[in-house]
Image (cartoon, rainbow, N blue to C red; front, side, top):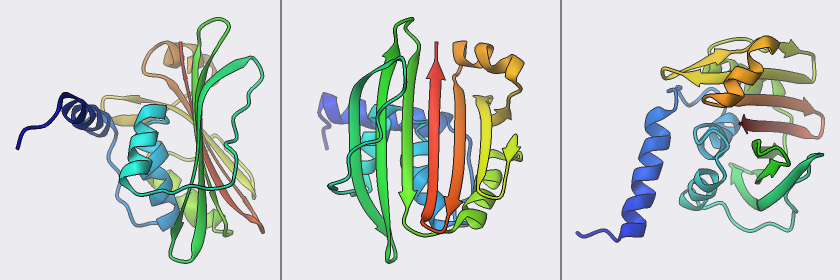
Length: 188
């Protein structure tokens, strides 16, 4: 079988993203697994998120992408829907740049079910460290990827991470209306 240049490029890009991503054991939460497959493993890289969503057959939705951040010019957006069992999921992704050239990308999955404790536990298992900010309704993790592992960051390390592999911020929040997983990547 001969692959076209486009297909070969897409396969190589996906392999590079997946090969450089830290491993995690799926199964702790099917909702986190869905988020990890389209947002976390591709580290919120817009092109890789779009490719992963297409591969996993996320479909159209009437929901608009959550694509606004003060000081960021948004280049592309994406909004798609899927489900896990009978629970609806909505994917929202975007990327853009600031006036100073900082690249920001964001990938969010809204779960139409309140499963915050299980999703939060799955996030801790994936990251291999606890949340830096933790409350009954929200957990925030700030990290970078180094040598195939997630490295938690202190505020003094944010700039160096953004200038290197990237500053990633994972927020898991939940209430009676559902659970939201959001991963933002900041690169200088």
